[in-house]
Length: 61
Image (cartoon, rainbow, N blue to C red; front, side, top):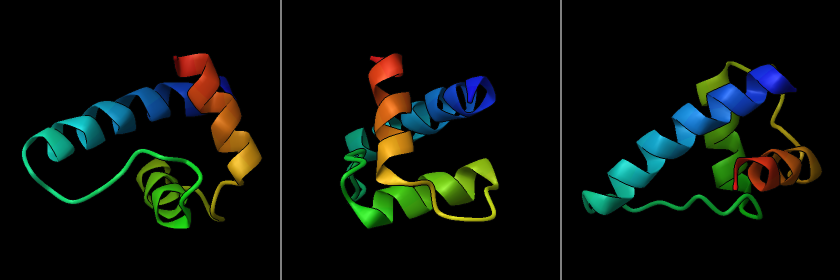
C-alpha cells in the first residue's frame, strides 16, 4: 500500500495541475471515473476500490 501512496501523490499533483489549467476533471475518489483514472495511472490490473482509495486519500491529507 505504501507504493500506492507514493503513486497517489504523483497522480494527485498531476491531476490538480490539470484542473488548475482548465481541464475538466476531479480528484473525488467517490467517482468511478476518478478511480479508473488513478488505476490506469498506477498500472493496476483492476480498478481500485472506493475503500482502498479513500484510505490512501486520507493518509495523503
